[in-house]
Length: 394
Image 1 (cartoon, rainbow, N blue to C red):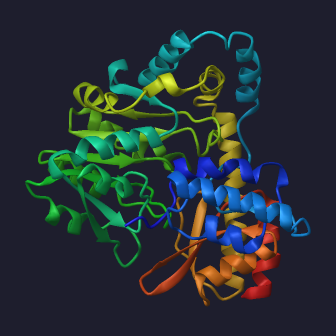
Image 2 (image 1 turned 90 degrees about the horizontal axis):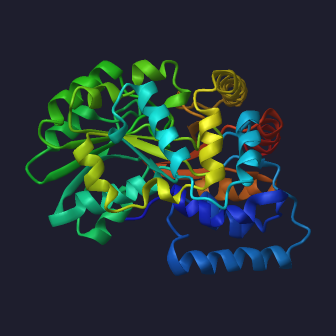
C-alpha cells in the first residue's frame, strides 16, 4: 500500500542531492520521481548504494539544474536563523533544555494555548509516526484522502491498523462529506492534510470547522498543516481554534516549509494535554532537536519580514509556472502551497526521466486514470530551467 515517499525517507536520500551532485537519469527517476516508498530500511540502503555507484560510472551526466521534486523553501532559512545557528555552536556541548522550553512557551503564547498543549519534535514526521502507532492499536481504522500525504498512513499496516482512503472531490479537494459518512465505532482517527499534498488544494475553512465540530465528538481528527504558511490567511485557516475550544483535535505544524528548515528538523503539534501525553510515549519529542536548530527556530519564529519576502518570491515563481503551463496548453490544479500539480500528455515515468536527463527533477503521480506531474516551486532560475526542458517535451 506504499504509494509515495515521505519526509523521513527524503532525508535518507538528501545527502545525494547536496552540492550540485550529478545523477544517472534512470536511477534518479526510479528513486526520486516515482511516488513509491522505496527508500526505507534495507531497500533504502541498496538504492543509496546504487545511486552512488551510478554517479561514479556516469561522470558526464549534467548536474541538477532545478531541484523541484521536494517541497522546500529555496529562499531559507533566514539570516536571523543562520546567525543563531552560529551562535549556538559555542554551547552546543550542552543539552538545550532551557532553549526548548523557551521555544515551546513562545509558540504557546503566540497561539494562545497552554504550554503543555505544545509538543515539540524534530520535524513533524516523528509526530506522524507516533500517531500511526497509537491510533493503529486494537485494529483501529484511519480515514484519509486519496491522494494525500502518506507519512502517517503508509505505516498503519505494520502496527495492526487499517486505512480507508477516500477519493478527492471533482476539484481535487478532500471530500469531507464522504469521509464523515464513513466514520463509525471502529474509526480511531480522521487524518486531513490541509492544504493537501500532492494536489495543493485547501478545503473551505468554515466547512472544515463544522466538520471538526461534529466528527471530533466521535473520534480524533488530525489536521496536518505543513503548508499553512502559504495560504492567504493562515490565522483564519488554522484549526488551532478547535483545539482551544477543547475539541478532540490534533494540529501538526513544521518549520520545514516556508521557514526553510527542511534539513534542520523542527516541528510541533498542538492538542489537548491528555493527547500530548498519549503520543509522547511513542516519540523522543523535542529531545531529538539539536541545539543549533532550536536556536534557529527561536530566532526566526514569526519573522514576518523574512516570511513575507519568501512567500512573495514563491508566488512570483508560481505565477511564472502558471503562465508557462497556460501558454503551452496545459491545465493545472490551483495551488495554495509551494508546489503545483498538472496532468501530463505522456506517461509520468517517461516524463520525469526525460526531465531529469535535462537536469530538472520533478515528481509524478497516477490517479483518475491520468499521469500527473508535481513541480515544487524553486528560485526563478530553476523555474526557467524547468521551462526550457518542459518546452522540449510539451
